[in-house]
Amino acid sequence: MIRLENVSYFYDPQAPPVLSEINLIFAEGVYTALIGPNGCGKTTLIKQVNGLLIPTSGSVSVDGMLTTDTTSLREIRRRVGMVFQNPDNQIVGMTVEEDVAFGPGNLALPPAEIRRRVVDSLGRVGMTGLEKRAPHTLSGGEKRLLSIAGVLAMDPRYIAFDEPTAYLDPPGRRRILEIIRRLRDQGIGIIHIAHSLRDIAEADRIVVLNRGTVLAEGTPAEVFNQADMLEAIGMDFPGRSR
Ligand SMILES: Nc1ncnc2c1ncn2[C@@H]1O[C@H](COP(=O)(O)OP(=O)(O)OP(=O)(O)O)[C@@H](O)[C@H]1O
Ligand SMILES: [Mg+2]
Image (tube, rainbow, N blue to C red):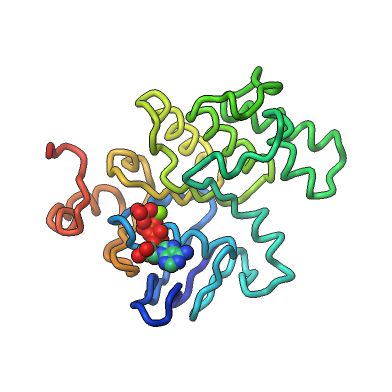
C-alpha cells in the first residue's frame, strides 16, 4: 500500500503550506477518487506518491519503501505509474510501439518480454493496430490512451491519473473511465483526480481535498450526500443542474 503520514508540503516557505498534515492510504485493487477545487493541492499530492516531490515534513511510503530513500526511488517509480494531465509531455517515441517500449526498455528486460508487454499494454487500452503510427498524428484521446499503455508496460501496482478525461468528448471520456474500472478489477490501485463528480461515481472511495487538507472521505454515496459541503467548495454534483 501507499501510505502518507502527516505529509505537509510547501513550494514557498513564506506562503501557507500547499499540503497540510495529510494522512491517507491507497491500497492495491482500490479505486480512490481525489477531488477538490482548483489549486487545492491535488496534483502536488500525487507527485508525492512516486517521489517526484518529497514532503517538507511527514513521510510517504510505497509497499514499505520511503520516497526519501534514493535507492528505492527507481522501484517506487516502477510500481506507481503516473498519467499526467497533458499526454504530449509523456510521449517519447517516434512510433506508438516505440513509445510504449521506452519504459520497459530501461528495465533491462529480455527483448521478448519487452515485446510481450508492448502488445499486451496496447491491447489493454484498445490500441492494437496503431503500432506504427507516429504519436503526433494521434487524436487527443488516443494520445491519452498511449500514455496509459506506456504506464501499463511498466507492470505497475498503482496508477495515478491526473484529470484523465479533460478535453475528451463523451465517448472518449467513457472509454477512459471503463479502462480505469477494468484496471482496478485487475488489482491495480487507482488514484483518480477528477474535476467533475460525474466521473467518479464508480470509485470505491472519494477523498475531498480543500486548501491542502482532507475535508471528507467516504464512499461515493456518503460524499455525494454532503451536498452543502460540496457546494461550499464549489464542486457540482450528479443530478443537480447548475
Ligand atoms: N511549481 C510550483 N511552484 C509554486 N507553487 C506551485 C507550484 N505548483 C503548484 N503551486 C501552487 O500550489 C497550489 C496547489 O497546486 P496544485 O497544482 O497541486 O493544485 P490542484 O488541486 O492540482 O489544482 P488544479 O485543479 O488547478 O489542477 C496552488 O496554489 C498552486 O498555485
Ligand atoms: Mg492539478
